[in-house]
Length: 223
Image (cartoon, rainbow, N blue to C red):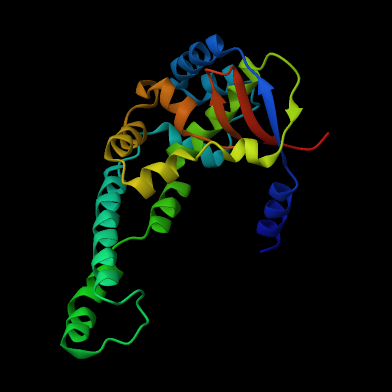
C-alpha cells in the first residue's frame, strides 16, 4: 500500500513538457531498436540501459493470449448494445426496480447477460497487465532520447490532453481495425512489430510524438 502511494505521489508531481524532435530520426531509430530486440542484452545495450528490468523481460516473447483482447472488445460492444436497449426500455441503470412483465424479462434474462460481459475498464486492466505492451511502452519512451533536438519547454496540461490516448479510442469507439493492429503487435515476434505502432500507440511518460509538428509531449520532473 505504501509503495503504491509513493508511486502515485511521484506521478502527481510530474509536469507536462513540449520538446522539439527530429521526426526523420524517429522512424529510423524505432526500426533499429526492433532490429536489436532479438536478444535482451542487445536491446539493453542499444538503449543504454544497464539491464532490462525483470518485469519487462517477459515482453520479448510473443503474447499467446493476445486474441483474448479482441474477444473482450467484441463482448464489450455487445454490452454497450444491451445497455442501450435497457435504457430505451426505461431502465437507466441496474438498480432501478424492475416492474411489470417487461421488468421481469429485463431482470431475468437481460440484466444477467449484460453483467457477464466485460466493461471498458476490464480491457484497460488487461492491457495494464500485458508484459509485451509494457516493453513496447518503455521502447516508445526511450525514443525521445534519440530524437529530441532542443531544450524542453513546460506547457499547460490542456496542450498535452488534446491528444487522446489511443487505447481510449480503440475501446470507446470499438475500433476493430486498430484493435487488430494492437493484437498483432502483442502476438508477433518482437522484431516483426510495426515501428509506427510503437511511435503512435504506446504512450507512457511520452504521451505523444507529433511528427507533423516536429514535437513531442511528455511528463517529467519539474526543473
